[in-house]
Each structure stands twice: as C-alpha cells, then as structure tokens.
Amino acid sequence: MKILVTGGTGYIGSHTVVELQNKGFDVVIVDNLSNSKIEVVDKIEKITGKRPEIEVFDLVDREKTSGFFKRHNDINGVIHFAAYKAVGESVEKPLKYYRNNLVSLLNILESMIETGVENLVFSSSCTVYGQPDELPVSEKAPIKKAESPYGNTKQISEEIIQDTVKVEPVKAIALRYFNPIGAHESALIGELPLGVPNNLVPFITQTAVGIRDELKVFGDDYNTPDGTAIRDYIHVVDLAKAHVVAIDRMINNKMKDKFEVFNLGTGNGYSVLDVIKSFEKVSGVKLNYRIVGRRPGDVEKVWANPEFSNKELGWKAEKGLDEMMESAWKWQLELQKEQNNQ
Ligand code: UFG
Image 1 (cartoon, protein in one colour):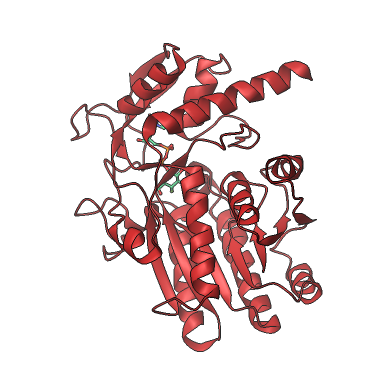
Image 2 (cartoon, protein in one colour; image 1 turned 120 degrees about the horizontal axis):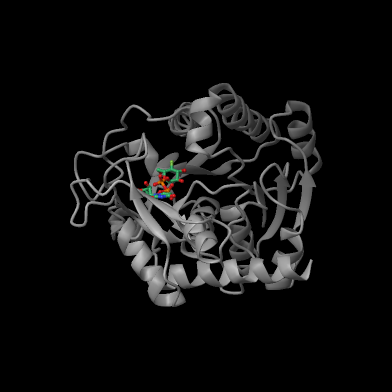
C-alpha cells in the first residue's frame, strides 16, 4: 500500500510518515520545503530504516500535481498536510493563504479523480469550532465564523471536500486537530519553527535555552481557574498514529459515510501556566515569563470530546502533558547540540 503524504517533511507530516512506515506502508512525500528541510528525510530513514520517496514541488502548480499523480499510478491514498498555518500571518496576507491552501486542495482532488485515487485524509483544525458554546467540544458542535483567514481555509476546505464526495468516487476523513506538541522520542524529528515561533511550546523551549529572552503569557484575566487560556495539548506521535488508523479505515472500507470528521484531542484542558509548570518540572529549568495582555483572536478555552474518535477509530491519545513537554525539551536540546556542532 502506497500513501502520498503532502507536507511530509513538516512537523506533523514527518511524524506521520514514520508511523506509516512503521506499519508497513510505502510513502511518497510531496513537499515544496517552504517551511521544512530536506534533511528530515534522512532522519525518517534513521528512525524507520526505510527512506521515503520525495518529490519537491508546489502543489499549487496544477500541471506538476497532475503529472505527479499520472506518474505515480500506484497510490492508494493521500494524507494532505501541506498548507500554511500561521494565524497572524494569514490576517496580514489573506490571499497568500487562500491561494496556497485552497488551490493545492483543488489540484489534489482533481488529480485524484483523474487518476482514480479514492482515499483522502485531510488536516483540519479545532479552530473551526471557534469558542464553542459547550465544552468539551464534540464533532456535532456548530461551525462558528472563522477568526482568521487561516481558519477560514480549513472551513472552506472541509466544504469543498464534502461537496466533492457527494458526486465523485472520492471519500474523505477530516481530522480536526487540537494543539499538537512534543516530538518523536528519538529526538531526530520535531517542530522546526522558522524565525520567532508563534506557538506556545517552541517559544517555551527556545526561551529556556536562551534563544528568546522571555515568554509572554497572553492574558491572565480569562474565565479559567488560573486566569490563563486553556487548550487540549496532544502529543504529535499520538496524532500521527490517528492518521494511520484513518487511512486503514478508508482502505478497508470501514467508513460509515463518504465524509467523516474526527476530533483529535486528549479530552484534557491545560492552562498556559499548567504547561509552564509541567515544563519546569520535567526540565528542571526555571522559565523566565511575564504576563502581558491577551493576544487578539485567541479563544478562552477549548478542549475536545474525543469519545467519538476513541470509539469509532479505536484510537486514543496516550501521552500525558509531562511526557509531551519532556519530548519537546529533549528535541530542543538536540537542536542546540546540532547547532553547536555546525
Ligand atoms: N501563548 C502564550 N504565549 C506565547 C504563545 C502562546 O501565552 O508566546 C498562549 C496562547 O495565548 C494560547 C496558548 O498559549 O492561549 C496556545 O497558543 P498556541 O499559539 O500554541 O496555539 P493556538 O491554540 O493559538 O493555535 C493552535 C494552532 C493553530 C490553530 C489553533 C486552533 O497553532 O494553527 O490552535 O485550532 F488554528
């Protein structure tokens, strides 16, 4: 069985390639390396003992995408990660986000139909729920108006896919991620933020090694026990494993509908201060942080109801917060080592 993983050298993509190969799938990656490095392929090979194929091009290019699918006529399914994901940047450059995230999806869907590939797993996000009226949030919760063009690309993408599966032989699973953090236990792959990280955990680990002066905690006046915002952090390897289950489900015709949606979260909500405390505990490093005002666009609290995913997929996130922070720290230390050797 051969799976195309778009964005396979990225953060979640690379961990998913590892899990797919561990389960015996052949993988071909397409990535334009806009936010990742080709060396990730060596690391995947080191972990799994198997080198995935890779082609470097932009899926926004229709000709190249179509040519790729025609050449690789043995693909059984597609896991589509390749997309821009910085919420703030998407507000500044909406068209960049709409073009990249939507055109690539259209090209992939058209090429799949053209070449008879029927199975698509799509990277979606809990951002589609906005600030949910009820917590924990289940897949049945209403979709709220998107807070950012990035979030809107995820909503529109789900709609495009839903409309397509109604009339084409394609079926799809959208996986709505909560907050993926941590890194592979080997510390050979992990999150590689270019420039100043937007996300909490890379900012914490970079502050701890002195790349950043201090972590700014965005707001302590939320309606939460300690006043800081709450998220459902999930280990990236747990998340990656869910993709393998989803692909298996499609290939083995276990889907109950041509379009299915699953929450990928743990069901536990942690505040920003909880995350900092866990980091300090596992690393033994005292973190330099300061409370500042809220970040525009942030929701107050969101965590998943993972019951449907647990039951239907037979999948459950296994790793706890300390384990996640420990792996993120180990990865940061490995990056420092690599840098010192250069
Ligand atoms: N935070 C800080 N300081 C920082 C960075 C983050 O206090 O320097 C706080 C945020 O305010 C938030 C929490 O840490 O309360 C988590 O923030 P992240 O940026 O790590 O994650 P978000 O929940 O904002 O965003 C994530 C993904 C998005 C996705 C969104 C909702 O990064 O792609 O979840 O699904 F859209």
